[in-house]
Length: 407
Image (cartoon, rainbow, N blue to C red; front, side):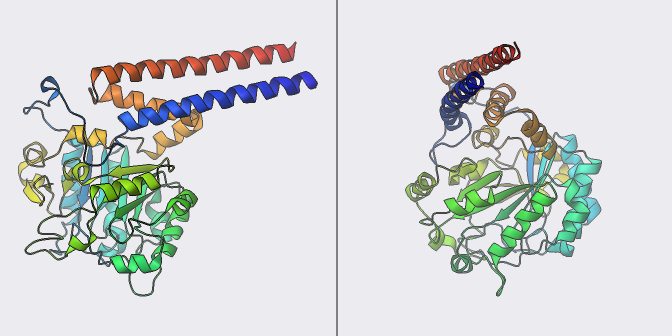
């Protein structure tokens, strides 16, 4: 018994030391590859690494804002209720089919508030169509959470991979000051209710927060840690002409704007949260493929939303040329991750946490050309090789210990 106790203690110590080493290395890898760089900065590409202008952009991940209507009045909203138009269901399906044929892997439905139109029926049918008919790897939704009912999960939950709820503060008064509220209803109560439903119906739960003058000094660490979202997207408040600033805009968001340094200070305050995914103004402008209610791509590079022609009229390939989409920036901000519920379940079952991280980084490097300098890439590959060797040593040691114990 004494021998077995000693062996067990040594084994636990070995695991602890190796895990510390792997965690430290992966934090460095995440900073280099995962897109968590200082807001407003980007990797410099050499002339030979610049994307070819004749390359056809593949719409791997698309954000479809099928409605602009919303029951909240967030002061910084950059997709406001300028129209009440929503495509007929069959036309929306036709557009989604065109996107699938063009290479779409992930669709994200947003608004406005997507659960507002037809009380979630329209949204649910699109979710079901994308998963059941188009067989998309990932279907997700961004919502404020106020209109979601459990019966929607009961009917459509099996077709949904990810549900992101917008929450900018864990103080009700701050949420109301921002405009994220409706009457006396508690936004935070809705947040926790939806979080529990996601767990029950096996839907990945995300949180989106817009950092602005009202919440930039708030420490959200305890609340985010308690809710355990798979990702916490943290956006720097963004001005868009015609939406939340300038002529013909429905919002005046200037009072919500924070500096790059204030945004960085907020990130530094929450650096202990592993699921945090920061997005500065620069990353947001050109790293998203956004479709409006007419299925037109929106180019936000100039600080406004300049629409293309509708994909329903000219097709995806012609329309996407006017999207302003930068695929490399999409990858650098961590736009590609394990976004399917089935992929996530497989990874969680088969691999420990640090092996998951290694797999994600290898996939990012191999699947998407060079996203860093040649020297950085070589260092990353060597580190990944070292980590796999360490894991192999662990397995060998465990095998030898078991053999000794059996004898």
